[in-house]
Image 1 (cartoon, rainbow, N blue to C red):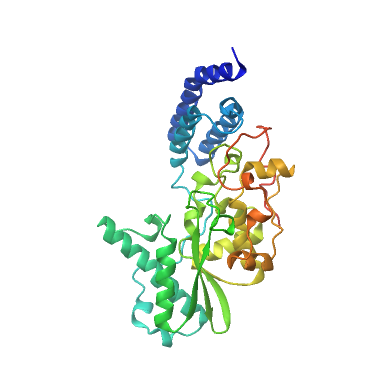
Image 2: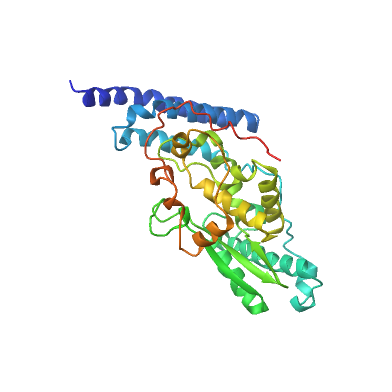
Length: 335
């Protein structure tokens, strides 16, 4: 019997065992009495999948049997979807009487003008969901995934009517549309607004990246997943967290060099999978790209793939050599 055949037989025999382990994990997460308890169960599931992944890898792709593990894993993660990893509720009231009765040109200052633009955009999100689902919803109830383009275009059109300079910016995976890291998905849109001589980042759908389901660091390294969302990287140090908190609360932040780098660093890190850190030999969630680099990335003159290995970005297609690699090692606040 060849090694390839014996390898397949072992994976076939063990498959029901691993599936049942993940299913038991699902029940534990479902019945967990605290968020912390659910996280510990999820970390055990991630570790088990990373440990067995090599059994389902034939040297160039993961076995179809392995896909059953990932579909069960997704069900476990979905149980955590409603939990936010950061306490920064949006500053939004649907019936804002002041904005409803005040003309834009009569607003007192730049802050009020930005707040008005964000209020209109957030209200538009809520109204779209009310129309679609035919029920009353709050902003917090709105599912923001895949809403960034529509919202950013609305914001730009609104600004055009108000006489405010605004541009919609696209962040494709690894800052390139030429190579489809996520089969054409995984992009994000936001706005840059110039008001009273200063530039601002406006992102009214940013909250979608701060749900717990895709923000556990031990998710990194699991084959056939795309690593973690932006959110977890934004809460790892105080500067990034401050930028994120301001955007989540107000919907805008001044486009200072620090805020722009923080904002884009979060996306840069989210495009990396576990192989990046294994190949680097260290788990470190810092980013060396400068504002000049990011400017070239955003206008299409350069991209992340030119500096990082393709297999280390996007969906991870092969197992780690060291399944015990600890991705939580740098998950501490850095001042």
